[in-house]
Amino acid sequence: MYVFDRAYNDFDFWKKIIATGSDFVTRLKDCARNRVLQKKVLRGRKHKCGVLYDGPYVSTSPSAKKSKIKLRHIIYRDKLTKKIFHFVTSDRNLSAKAIADIYKRRWAVELLFRWLKGHLDVRYLPTKTPNAVKTQLAVAVLVQLLLQLKRLIEKYQGTLWELLRDIRTSFVQKILAGCGPPEDSRDGGRTYVMKGVKISRSAVKPIVRFLLKKTDAVTGLSLKHQESRVVLSLHDST
Image: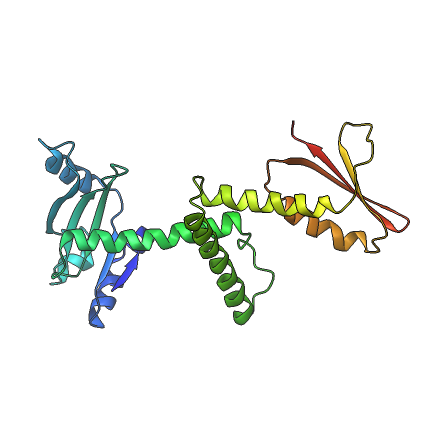
């Protein structure tokens, strides 16, 4: 079973899938014909959820008119979001509800990758080699699964993103706890000094920025190299 989004609304492409002995499920693009059908289906049952329609798919494509392939058009309203979806599928055995559930699982995968790109910085891959890409994606998925596990075990009430943010903030606080008391700062910020640490500024800066990235606890960051110590200045958002 092939499952894909509306970008692949191409009857010739669908025919190639069917020719291999496989089936497909995809969403239909919005068009006047679908809107008319939806209006008829919703007449007298505006608030009904679940499967609203399961019938033959009629395409305006010249290729479709010549073809004898029969497809199903399913209209489904999600119970939670109340959003209406139009699906087309070549499968004639599964129930309309099962078809909708299959597409939901594809959407869940897309949401996962959006989360990984947005919160775990896998939008831009540092390398393009296949093995390195697979490794980075595998690690990102593992981190996401570990966050879900931690959320379940600790019965965390917030979102996964909020949990990740709390972990990052806690990590930074533990690092700063070993830096000694903060020095006075004229601008009202806090300056932590890691005395005796011999490390290049170019190496420290990206690490600290990564740790503080997207945390609400900090709005400013500056590093100064003074003799054999690294000075880290943090500015509270308050």
